[in-house]
Structure formats: C-alpha cells, structure tokens
Length: 365
Image (tube, rainbow, N blue to C red):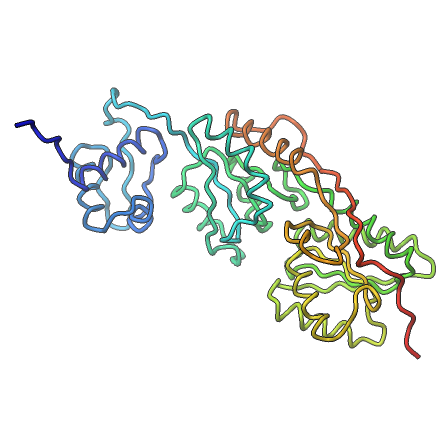
C-alpha cells in the first residue's frame, strides 16, 4: 500500500506563509494587528493565534507586550531560509474603493513590468481621507502594507506632505499641492481649460459656471486658472461662477438649481469631473433645458462612457499609451532606486469636438 502524502494543518500552513513573508521582508519590524493579518491570510482568529505562537516559540517574532505589537526578531532568523521570487508590491492609495476603468487601462503597462519582477500592483482605499491630521493613521497604514513604492491618487495636501517628509518612495498620480516635491505625471488641465474658455468666449458666452469640488484639489485649481486666463482676454468682460461640490448628485443638483435661479444665470458649464457631467445631463433633462440651445457644456476630463453619448460631448483626451509609458517609467525607477531622477510630466490634451457648444442664448426680456 502506497504511503499517503503528509497533510499539514492550516495552522502550520499559516505559520509557513508568515515565515515566507518575513523572509521576503514583506513583513518587517512591527507586524500588523491580528484583524489585518486575519484579512490578509483568510484564516480565523484561533488559527492565526496558534500560528503566531509557533513563530514566537521559534523566535521569528517577539511576544506581544501590554499595549505593544509583535515585532520581527531578525537576529534570530535562520540564515538558510529561502527567499521567494515574490517582491514587495506597489500600493495605489485612493479614496475611491472602485477603480476607474481609465485608471485600470493606464495601469496595464505598469502591472506587466511589475509582474516581470515578481511584484503586484494592489489598490487600497482606507477611510482616512476626511481626516485633517492623518499622520498617525498613515504611519500604521504603511507598516501594515509593506510596499516598494506608493502611488497617491486624489490624496489630501496633508497626506502628500506626510509622504514627502517621511522620505517614503511615493509617486503622485495627479497634481502636487504647492510646495510639494514628489514626482508626478499629470494631464495639463490648465491649458485644456484655457482652450475651453476661448471656445466659449468665441460663442459669446459671458456667464460661465465651473463645477469643481468642495476641497480645492490642485487639478481643479488648474482648470480655474486656465478659464480665468481665457476670460481675461474677453471684451466685454466675462464672469466665472465657481460651484464647489462634494460630488454627490443631490448637492450638484442643488448648486445647479441655485445657479439657474440667478438673474444672470450661466449660459455655459465647465466640468472637472465626468460624474458631475452625468448628474447635470439628467438634471437638465428633468428641467426641460436644452443643450446647447439653452446652455453649452464642456467636460475637461475624459471618460470611457462619453463615447456612448449622442450628441457627443465636447471634452479633452490624452494619449493613453504615452501617459501609461511615462507613469510606468517613473514608478519602476522609484521601485528600483528609491527616487526618480527625471522631470515630472504634464501631458498635453487633445480637444475632442462635440455638439454641446453653441452660441450663447440671448437674454430674455
């Protein structure tokens, strides 16, 4: 009778996985808390605790003290333990739990190059973006998610500055705040908005609304600067009405209600977000307001679903392959050397003509 293969227990498998993570330096210094480890390993509390006890007995980790987390004891680790081909991942930090389709397309090139090194690109969206002082939470987040580099998407000014001050390898998937010196690749929003403002001015629009965000993000500020530059060239003088929103459809709708009740309401709207555009389109339909006869629309950023609209919306697009190549080059340099030697990039955007810009309507008597 043939001998059956030996089956290891779930506890032993969990302990083995933890040892490999420590050997690969995916876990270094302070271990994450039990809740986080349970989530990473997909095991129950008792299984995890027994596995951790095994590592304590074998001197891989320290025992937890009162108010202290377990720590890796590297001075006791066996020198012969094999290091796997797996390497630390790159972590994409964003406030949005659902990854945008365009971002995923732009990340494909980077993901392939990371995979060649035995790395992965992981996406996390912790609920800390509303905090004015996120430092303590960021320190714990970085310890719980060992990473070769961090990609920061739509993070706050305080978060950008924290990563820079800590010297953690970080790349901005977006615009830096004033005075922040982190590498980035970003679309040239200001130039696109300047072009949009000139387009509207040529159609004699003199009251233009801008839908931005409640928090003054650098990209939105760039759009506002571009529009103001364009409108400064207009005679007679044009006016920009800034509507700052938190992106929820009800607040966007309320701002539109307020703007269209003004004695001099906007005859054109410019959007910093495609989701704002979608809310506005449905709101305009509900009010019987026609585009572009009653109001003209320009969406500065692109989105894949814009191709499904008819008549088409005026917007701006980058070259996704060129954008992805610039992102990959800088992130891989950051992963391999800890810094980016080359300059940051502002990508030129191409205007995509649609049917949503028309002559400004004549004021009603």
